[in-house]
Amino acid sequence: EAQVTQNPRYLITVTGKKLTVTCSQNMNHEYMSWYRQDPGLGLRQIYYSMNVEVTDKGDVPEGYKVSRKEKRNFPLILESPSPNQTSLYFCASRARGAYEQYFGPGTRLTVT
Amino acid sequence: AQRVTQPEKLLSVFKGAPVELKCNYSYSGSPELFWYVQYSRQRLQLLLRHISRESIKGFTADLNKGETSFHLKKPFAQEEDSAMYYCALNELGSGNTGKLIFGQGTTLQVKP
Image 1 (cartoon, chains in turn orange, purple):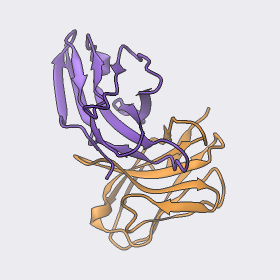
Image 2 (cartoon, helix red, strand yellow):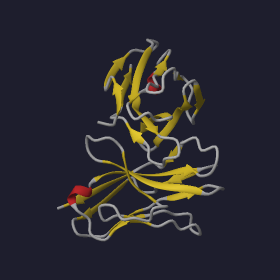
Image 3 (cartoon, rainbow over the protein chains, first blue to last red):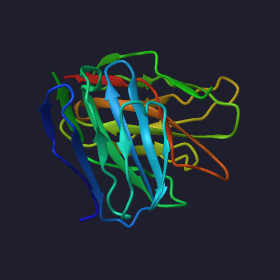
Image 4 (cartoon, rainbow over the protein chains, first blue to last red):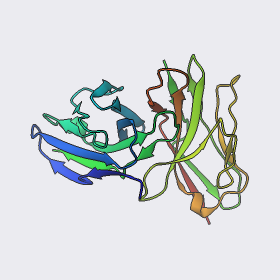
């Protein structure tokens, strides 16, 4: 089944403890993105990648890192999480030349 | 700056009533506009895009460049339409990064 998967789905952590949220897609898509969803703010793009080893900042990149060493994976790294990074995170992918983005199921992160 | 505005956080209607979810955008170039929907406990998925001018699940949306709007309409709401709806904008043309700019989202509640 063609899909985008994220792990973990739920995570509660403490301030300053490094964490990684994984994202994987099996559709051979070139483009991948990370978004965060906050009440009243909709979804905002954190980082995106146009292909392997090509990444760039979105609208709210502060406090996040990404890497794209393989086409299928696009992990989101929080080196030192803070409470204002408590949010619902979505990974998405899209094929070059296509218009539809496919979203993962979301990861709910709580930083205390 | 590119922006998408959905003025209503919550829209509550009775089954069978007409529905209009408002979306206004601000963009200097040629935008490509979408509606995405998130049903309860499901991932975000594409509902429709303005270029295709199609009707999906009875919903239609017309791009009005003069009013910079892309409102989503359905003549007779059904209970299964209850969901969160996001209007989104994508830049057209070369150099398309696949970045989507989302509105704040509108929760549609269809009462029996």
